Image 1 (cartoon, helix red, strand yellow):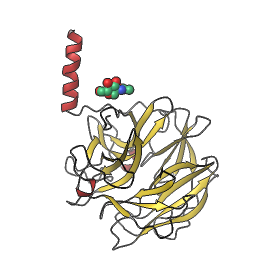
Image 2: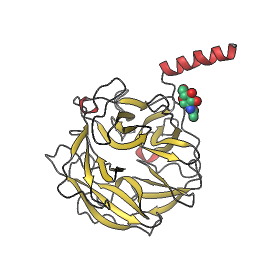
Image 3: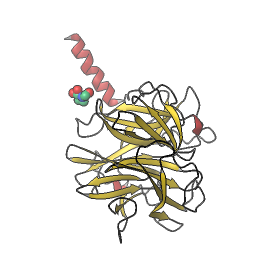
Image 4: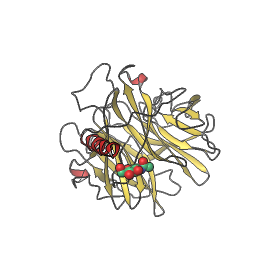
Length: 323
Ligand SMILES: *[C@@H]1O[C@H](CO)[C@@H](O)[C@H](O)[C@H]1NC(C)=O
């Protein structure tokens, strides 16, 4: 009785102060993990792709490691002839039929001169990727979005790419099948927008659980925390909106439209965890849905090169993801 009472007091407290679980212990190479993208190969090996080093590839026998560096996915840089073609960002990796698709961003920090590229592989490993160049999702000064941070989603036989951003927020466009290019004549639609401040919102990702499509994204300042720490709360955090459609109508827990600044926080700085973001959600065969991301461990250091790979189980039983 007494312990049940204490437990319920504890859960009230946990809900009211957002007591987030710490990231699971990770072994091996848990750095070099900016904007991670996770996939599990049929032989049970996990592959992690991340920003920089021409898309770094790591693999591990389990989600928590030990992670080993295997090499660069696109060692010669992208075929896309834009600044940043040798410094590729924010990978997304998906299996389509028997082929793995790796989407990546070519850009320069703070610039809208950007494109989303694609490479394909039969086995995920280094030396296996063929770069196909641009998907046709591109941006330049004057566009409402920045063509970075892509995520492919298949719904009812149609592929969609969500991407962006800053500027006018997160966007989505229909893709051809197979998803190497945008669908002919497809126009981009707005998924989310924060009208105030710097419109600091990027890295959309759609994940379906039950009857809802969840739009996860990162809000705030991502990078350079060692040189320039933002005001408390303005650093990266992970937020979500949901909808019964994968293409529009996303609202947060309070019912606020994601296109009007809505966004419910899933994970933010807590304890020694600072600025979590660049997230993905992965349905692990043994653990169920996990949220993965990069974060700063304040006991180690705030530089971009010190960011670590974080993983937590997430629980959707309330209808909203809880870490
Ligand atoms: C998910 O959260 C609910 C409500 O807090 C809890 O009853 C349930 O046991 C949790 N599920 C898991 C798998 O932890």
